[in-house]
Amino acid sequence: MPVDSIFLFGQFSPGDLGASYRHAFNALGLRTHTLDLNEHRHHFGWWTRTRIPHRLTIRSGLIRSKSLRAFNRLLEDAVVRSGAPAMLSLSLAALLPETMDNLRRRGIRVACFFPDNPFPPHHGSRPETLPVAREADLCLIWSERLVEKLRAAGVRNPAFLPFEWDPQVFPYQGGALRTRVPGRASSSLAIGTGNAKLSSKSCRPMCL
Image (tube, rainbow, N blue to C red; front, side, top):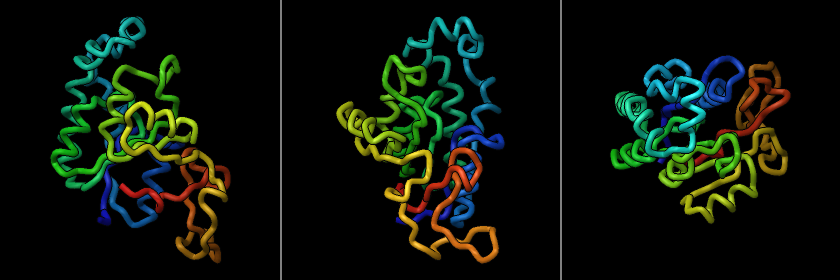
């Protein structure tokens, strides 16, 4: 079923991944609702906002769950109030699996794009990362190898979505989407760096 709006969770400063995705979805005619992670970190427990306690507790699922609960209730409420039928998370660092489950129970389709390696001992891995990915209707990842690892780890619908434009993955189809450059048309949009010449890929194949 097509959607006319989408809720985006991530970071939206110029140059951030979220800013590029917001621009891309807007260019496709979708209304976007956002919640910026950087603007709401004060809702985290103090031990997650403080450097040394954060480092000491970063591998504790119990402590992180308690620390992130208030933030996740805020996020869940914001998604529901937006009325958007789908949410795309561009960060798994602060999400809890019950938030994804609660949204799905309300009929909201949930997807995530993970721009790092979600498996330990990599820096981006947290105790809640893979449980969150398992709750998503669609889990996008930048590596084909990681798609297979996610599937083996029980993620229901992992899919490959590269950072940069790849003509073998997203071949030019011509005329599907007009750019702001007069006389030029493209079916691709800039994702990741905010520079359309350096980083482009299509949002159109993303089926939530």
